[in-house]
Length: 89
Image (cartoon, rainbow, N blue to C red):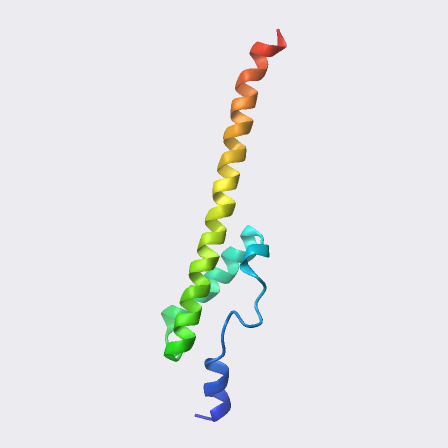
């Protein structure tokens, strides 16, 4: 195994990645799938695995933020439409 392979495998996955807080749901979800795949495959050095795990946790939290926001918007829309017929008369 070459030294370059170890260096490439040991790079911080979040180093060149965009800030999690700026990601859309779809981008965060897709990157999370990639992170999980890399972790399941194994072969990463410990430091890289820890960095991947931390990135995955942040991505999962971002996805949850999007889902919670969507749930709130849906509930608000449903409550608004439930109130509209009464107010229309």
